[in-house]
Amino acid sequence: MTRNERIHALGYCRSCLNETYGLKLKQEDVLVYEFLGQCMKCGNTRHIVHRVKKYKTWKLMSSRKLGHEC
Image (tube, rainbow, N blue to C red; front, top):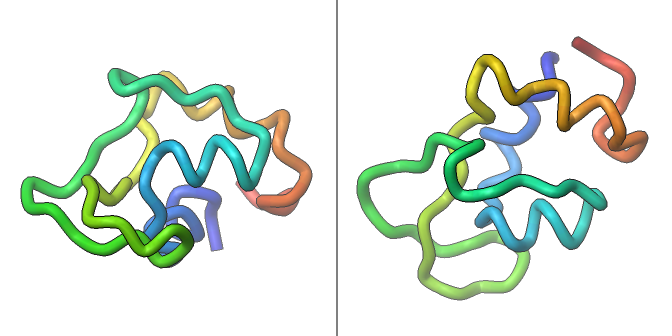
C-alpha cells in the first residue's frame, strides 16, 4: 500500500494528518474531496484529504508513522 493509499483510507482532515503524523502539509499540498465529510480522528465536518499532490510527496518521507512504503 502506498502512502497516498494509506492517507486516503484514513479519512483524516489535513490538520489531523499534520498533528498525528508530524507532517507539515499546507492547503496547496493536498487534494481534498469536493464535499465535506466527517474526519475519522476529530469527528468534525471538514474537507477530507484524498491524496498528497504528486510533487509534494517528499513531505511524506519524514513521517515514520506512515510506514516505509512508497
